Length: 169
Picture 1 (tube, rainbow, N blue to C red):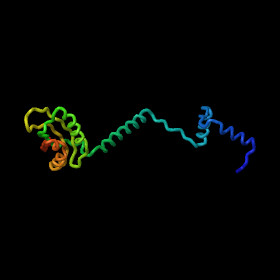
Picture 2 (cartoon, rainbow, N blue to C red):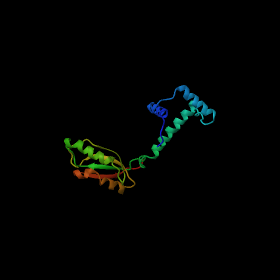
Picture 3 (cartoon, helix red, strand yellow):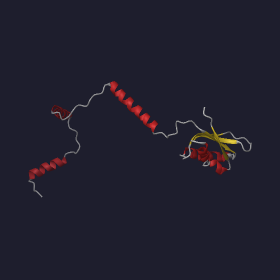
Picture 4 (cartoon, rainbow, N blue to C red):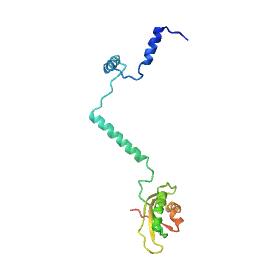
């Protein structure tokens, strides 16, 4: 270890006592930046015109939109291809909210055979075997729509699910 004389120790102690993060005075900062620019060590940032700035923002927004569009699930732009008709198994008033939540969770879940586009319940009457609701789905074929229908929770509640292809329009 190298020994320091008392004057060096005083200087080191004084330096250590200084605040760690002090911004330089504006005048000093300006002089340093001017000197660096004069030596070619620092270049001024290019200033964009208002039109160029607008175009840059517009281009960024367009790219973000197109990126989101390209990354969407593959089938979202397709029209529904099949309807799943939910037959029978009417619910009591107390069960309705719970079943709606269960069916909604099933509809939002990804399915290998297709995708659920939308669905809803019909107003119930006292008729037996009536259609109580539906789901609109996208599927590559009726077989795929049938495979999707087999996973519907309506079966567990004693109902049936009827698959019908939608005529292209």
